Image 1 (cartoon, one colour):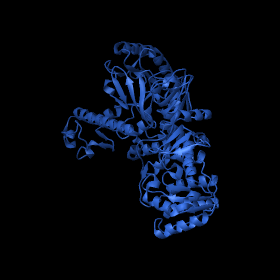
Image 2 (cartoon, helix red, strand yellow; image 1 turned 60 degrees about the vertical axis):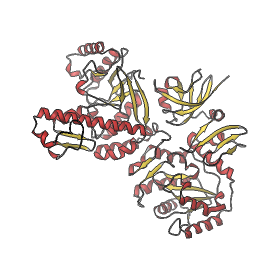
Image 3 (tube, one colour; image 1 turned 90 degrees about the vertical axis):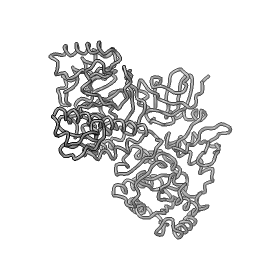
Image 4 (cartoon, one colour; image 1 turned 60 degrees about the horizontal axis):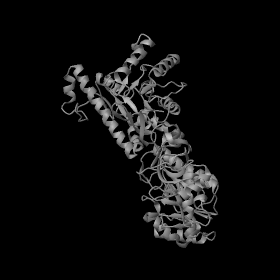
Length: 615
């Protein structure tokens, strides 16, 4: 738990933070290696162990640095040149001795050693990070192990690895602090760094940058210079390129679009692409930090997009939490470019063709990369918030993923009749699933799903089949709210928030649930989430889910992490959560995951909306 570092904003594992030192330093941050030993710096690196003749000399120097720098500087204890394969006893001795000397005298940073008892430091060094470049699996395993052990509001420093091309990916994984070591080394080797890769100076005809170091010179001019002068200019450019990339990444985090950026940026180097793919395979690591909804579109432009935590989570929750309405007939439909689907021209044609038969039918939309979307969840993030490349061509992995989602659903839920009003890849997917499960699917489209002939056939087919259970408008509205509630809070939550005897008020999509004169919840159409009232909270507290426990105080405005006694580990950023304390109950939106709430010492855990004192 840190005293000098606070995470202010998150985008999955990536975060914007702030060090409260002699000057406020915002992360992701790049340390200037040439100034790290200056007592005037806010962050001071006490250097490599090997510069000292003994541990005692290193500790004495550490005390001297603290005396000169003061308590409002962060001092990183001796750590450099300890590779991942260095003798463990040497690394342990260094970390324990260096850490204990400065632990309670100001902000401190120490090397992280696997198996070491983690203390309360403000920064941990991922030692030997540079040695793990091009070894994506070991790099990721090392980082995830480190993340599990240290407090979530502690900064991570990865030395000697950052370049303009890999900075975005490293930040995406949750690293906060870097240095410009690679920029300096590259400059002295006539290497010109860019976010698109590195170039040897003699291979360039012009400089693809207009920073202060590049704007008034050309490669031919630099090659004529003295090597030292040339290295100085290249070092300045390389550092500028890193700083520019860091600024761009910070803006991407603020916008919530870092994932979209790294899906393109990782193509610069094969090990970065491998790192992204391996990260996606670590579902629990990424999903636990991914918000339940974002205020921007999810842009899916490549095969890896379907492996995003938000998309996999949506599919898993349909499989694990969703209960379909009682209906004998299932209608499978293609997606549309416009979201929510029911506002699109094509879906209005389907709805009009169904006519009175629609009250007998359950609708599911087939789409890539989401998989399948029950009509009740078409507002819920990311179903109404994604955009993807439309070419008419679906690759094999795309078909396999969507088919697996449909197969999982149909293997759990059974219908008397299944009708698919689809063509092309959508039909191929339905045929694959039908063959695997041994079920019959009726195809109503006659070549073009929106042609008059196809719509007429859809109407006649559904009219003939729909003779079973009929649902009223109120039942359809209640099914929608129940599905959204179960999606966000788990199976059974819908019956608590939409109990027997409740009434739905307000037109779609602004439904409100009332029990008598008391409002329980409101559908938030922007994200397909629910805004629970205090009356609704009283019902939800019975489940024990999505609860944040606090001590005997009445919260106002927000709840800070130190005020959290316990929190449901299922809580994700932007979740609706229920506050339970001895003096009050409340409801609000989570700013961090439940795990972070319990383990953090700084930061806003929950933004409150309603609070009620307990008498």
